[in-house]
Image (cartoon, rainbow over all chains, first blue to last red):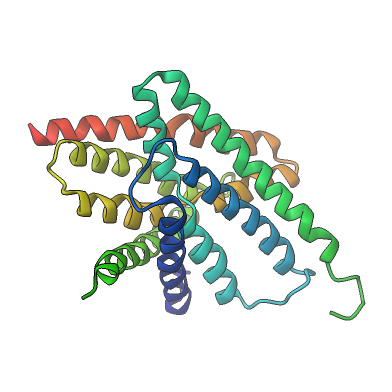
Length: 133
Length: 129
């Protein structure tokens, strides 16, 4: 089944907004050292972990699929960026391979840790079985 | 058009196009795939790394003007690729007991993004003569 037009529109609009938020925080053009990009990707990973946990089946909130696509595929998908990480690593590696590899390792570890933290922070908010929302 | 709008609008349009391309390609690849890995996310991220390297190379050589590079790299390709889904999908794989798949998915990103960006940068040199 192909993506529905409403879902595609939600992802496109969300990506535009998420991308603008990233440009505000990290700068539209790459900077060195790329602290802004590290922050943006960690924040986006934290947010997707928490949002996923809150809206999954049996979660705290009952969000329709279009809204979940808007937030996860749109806002957070557009906010975070792997291509910018790759070219930042490449630029850093130009000054010595170790810097590029270190940046990649720190980036990857921060995404996982942030997403795991998001899941964990939101988990206690899960709706009790049979309880009221 | 004010200076702010002139900078913001192309970034927003680029971000929308990048997100749309991600949704279409990622959905298509995931449907073709075997479900072992989230192949759609891997496909957009690795192709995005290659294209971003190409854009960086063209910008460094002056073929791509600075404003064009900002829209392509920070707008279109920035939104085309994603880290949030990659992090969540890695954790979801690991939580469902598929730790090897999770590790492979993560290592494919960490190990291939930089080399592909370097290939893109080299392609810019070749294209530029």
